[in-house]
Each structure stands twice: as structure tokens, then as C-alpha cells.
Length: 313
Length: 313
Image (cartoon, rainbow over the protein chains, first blue to last red):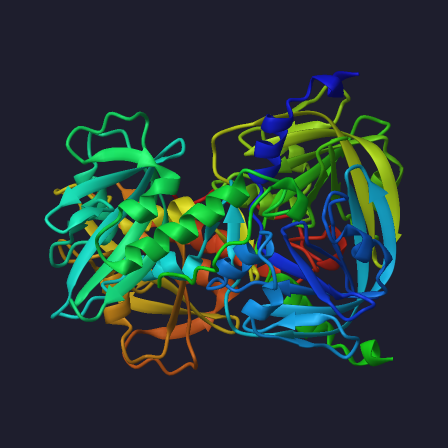
């Protein structure tokens, strides 16, 4: 049996190399409690009849409901909704109290601001290893013009954010900065400044792109720059910031600053509040990443109720 | 029955709003003929046992084989392989003659240069409307460090290309240009130049991003700029070109040029050969887009054998 030799970590990495969107799958319990979980195991299956499928994990705390329900809904998250993905991949209590939602005609919860939403009747269920395959017939759906959130190799990405980072969003009056959320294993790089420890950041010269500036600033360090993580404007200080995720090859990064354990970063940051907000979101997402075949399956992790962090941009 | 009122075109759009990667699913026929089709109906299902699924359409010309085979393979395409996606979504003859491939231990074709490849034994088949759900047990797999090709709302995208477009790839000596593949329905905008009709393009000033330059050049036209489509360097002329897809709101675009029917564009282009290559690829992909719930299901279209076009970059 060759499959006995498969390395589960490597297999998870291989599965994760396939780019996906992100959904929150929802249903209403018989005693009218809304339940939901984050999943990227969504596939459209058939147009005639209209069918889709999602795969709830057997270890999911809400598995029994999804194993017996007659109706459910699939909400394709928009690219400004990674906080909702994180929320429904966590153990936060009263998660539906923290989002806008309404019942569809069959009682299933529809989440506001999503890219598309499908109301389904269960068409078939198939057992498949540690998950079910839940096939739904689409009874109704709606769609917005918001682009969908993306997920690849363990991280969210927003094509809108990446597009925006390419353009000179700053006005003439604004000072532009570019920064890095630079990790090495479970540590993050901070830089000492006059106003305390901050995420490393650099002034973007006029008529230069943020990414070029960051690439130049990190030249020779071996730090690999990834996706745009957040863009925000500090209107009071008249400054705009674009933060990229980045990975360091080691703890030695010359004079950029020093690494501290990820979970202590929010307390250590003494600069703008927005940086703390960004890093709190980053920590939540990192915790979820460590668990589960998918974006977040409730029972893979052991997260405790946490405060919902809004996107920094 | 509310579902009788579902608009199939709108449903396809809603399904398509979910971002995906792109795979080529392959199998070997009993008489040793390799077969394959492009699909984005891939989902990883289970780690223990290792299971994945894909959904072959019943209208697929190779459906009978995928309905009876004992083994198959899934190749997750890398972001420089959109030409292979187009190839396996077309009716081109001898498609395996146009790619690098080898048999896995069970005979299924593995395509070279892919992001990840899974060798599977059929675990289960489930009928689901106009498709099957084919569940495979992963017997073996490999993974490269190449990022996967993305697909969203009917178009391919490459995060590597979009990343590259943000950086000043040109050397000091190089002249940078940015251009648009600007469509209105099935027509494309061309611009008259000294050397004949060309794709509209603009010189990028020093220390300015390509996207900023294009945004400025198209200001006031209502043309909406989309994803990066191709980046190439004309080493002889010492020029680099970045082309974005874009959509015009009408045929009136002032003095940018004029629209001509898409299929006549390759003949009309009299500039660099690379522009013809880019547009030939664009036409192939446009044809495939019109057909099928997925990236390309053989039997949805009626494409005739065409010459395989390599990526322009």
C-alpha cells in the first residue's frame, strides 16, 4: 500500500497549493440557533439541475446539524471579509451577533456583504473519509459586484488590495509609507523608533511604487516579500501605509530591528493603533492556519473566544 | 418550485464568482491513449484517508472513460501554464503531443511543470445532475514551488504577473511601455501607429508604475482596467511591455483608435510579433470562456483544432 507512506503535512501543503475562494456555510438548528463554519471546500457541480457541494469535517462541532439538516446556505465571502472568515473559523461565542445576517425563505442564515449567496435544499450526502460531501440543490441565490476573497497556500489575498497597491493612492499632500509584516517562524520583526516599537516601514519617494521601495529597503536580507496585507490611511497624520507580508530566512536581519514572539507583538507595539489592529488580525489568522485541512474547521483548533478584529483598511 | 425561476446565466455568473485554481484531469484509456480535460471543479476532501474530488461533465467527450476508469491523476496548473489550460479545454488533436508528460506508477498521465500532481485510485462515484462527482484516493503526489494559476469571473490571473507588474522590472537602459487589451463585447481596440495597427500602449515615465501610467492615459474614457495579462521584453528594441485587460463602456473612446472584431485582430496587427501571439492566446481563451460551466468542458464548445499559442511572457 503505497498510500501508507504519504506524509500528511506534505499532502496538506499539496492540497493547499490549489487556489480557492472562501465561504461560510450556514444552517439553522431545530431550536432556531444559527450555526456556521468557514470552508474552502466549495465546488459548483451542475447547472441542470443546479447543484453545488461543500465538505463539512466530521470533527466539526456543528457536524451533527449539517449531517441532518434539510436546508443550508453557502456565502461566498467578499475580499473585504477576511475578518468574517476568521470569525467563523474560530470558537468565538455568538458569532452571528457580530455580523449582519438574515434568514432566507427556508430559514438558513445569509451573511450581508457577501459576493454571492446560495440557498440550498440537501440533495445528497456522501461519506468521504474524515469529511462528508454535502450536495445542495440551489433554490435561490443572489450576487453582488464585490470581488471574492482569495486563499492560497495558507494565506488570504485580495486582488483589489494588490491592485490598489500598484497605484499611487496618495494625494500630493500625503506622505506614503510601505511596511513589512516580516515573520520568522512564530516571531515578528519590530523596529525601534522615536515613538517606540513599530512594524518596519519606509518612506516611499515620489513617483515610486510601494513595492519597489520595500524591495530596495530589504535588498540583501534574503527576506521574501509576499502579498499585500493591508492598506490604510492615517488621515490625521496625512500618511498612507501599505503593508506586505514577508518571510525572513533567519533571525539575522542586520539593522532592521529584532524579532519577538508573535503573541507579544500587540502589547509591544507603541506606535499607531492601526498597527495593533492589523497585527491582532494577523495573529488570529495565523492561529487558524495551523489547524485544519481547510481555512478553519472548528474542531481542529483550540481557540478561545477572542475579540473580533476589523480589517485595518 | 422556486428553483424553476433560476436564471442559468446568472447562476453560472454566481458560481463563477468563487475564485479557483485550474487543473487538468487525466487518465489512460484501456488501449493506452492518454485523455484529459481542464476543470476547476477540484476540491480536497479528506486527509485520513487522503481523498480529493473532481466533477467530470456528462457531456464531456471523455466522460465514458472517466465514468469507468480505475485510476486518474489531477494536475494543478502553475501560473505560467494557462496555455495548457486552454489546450485541454479545446478540441485540439494530439494534445498530449504538445505538452511534457509521463505516466505515473498506475499509468495515468502527469503533466510536467505543474504546481502539484496527485495520482489517484477511484474511491467512489456519485451522480450529480449534469456531472459526476469522482472521488479519488491519493496514492502518490508531488509538489513544486511554483505558484498555482488562478481563475476568477471567467478569466485567468497570475499573482506572479501582478506582483511583477508592481515592480520596476526595466533596467535603466530599457524603455518601459504599458498597454491595454481593451474589449467592447467581441471587439478589440487597436491604435494606428507609424508601423501599422497596434494594441494601444503608452510610454511609462521614470519612477512611475505601469498601472498609474495606464490609468492616467485612459482617464475620462470610462474604460475599466482589469488584471495583468502579459509582460514581455523586446530585447532587440530594448523595450518592456506590460499589458492589462480592460473593458470599454461603449465603442466611443475618443482618440485612442478604433474597435475591430476580435477574430480579425491577429491579421490586422502589423507591429511586433509578440502582440499577435498575445492576442491569439487571448482569442483562444475568449472562445473557451463562452462555453461550459467550468474552465472548459470539451463538449460545450465547438472549437476546431487550433495552433497552440505559448504565453507571451
